[in-house]
Image (cartoon, rainbow, N blue to C red):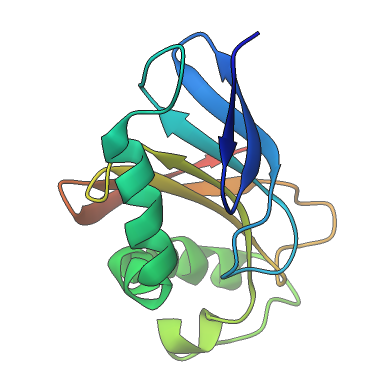
Length: 144
């Protein structure tokens, strides 16, 4: 199996056309996450995906601002329908409750951010993926 060593994130393995590290440790979050680099060769991820990670790592607050409207779109009906969820008045109050689970990176303008939130009900193991395409986030999906 082909492997690639990223200087910050560690060892990646090639799985079909995706480079995968299930134990990546980006400097901008506490703990391990899953990172996918889309595309590339048998030797390394694509330069665009590596540049995408560098941009995300250097601009994490901007990444959060890209997805904030979709975060709020997820939060509002959740808070209205699930007992015990804190009542936030704005998306800025939601930040700090997110748990980053993974990144799927094609480039610095095309990537996915997968989160869970501390306020999700204990039995709720759903993961929410926010899709950034052409530098904008207009949708999210819920898995789990």
